Length: 98
Image (cartoon, rainbow, N blue to C red; front, side):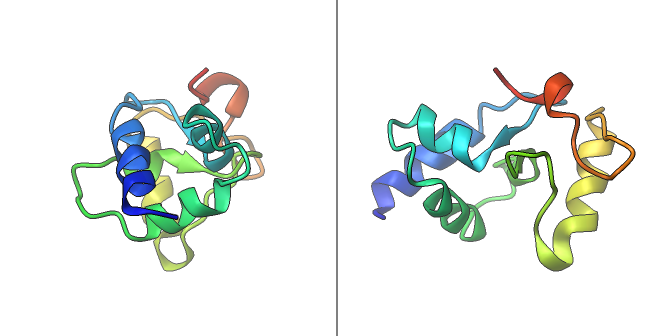
């Protein structure tokens, strides 16, 4: 878990377009480190800038995490047009960046 890995995470997350999401695991795999999804989560907890769309990173099943920020995250995603299933998860079939 290096600052370089965190920088790569932030660079990738910054490229997720409005209305799309990526899972922690997708980001790890995209960076060539498929077993480091937890480290992606660590990086996102330390996100250095509001310019990085942190809300667009969700669990593999579309669950929105974030503790006290979960409702804020969901509100930001809804405002971007992200579609949610009736159980409160992001519709990954429609909204995951492929």
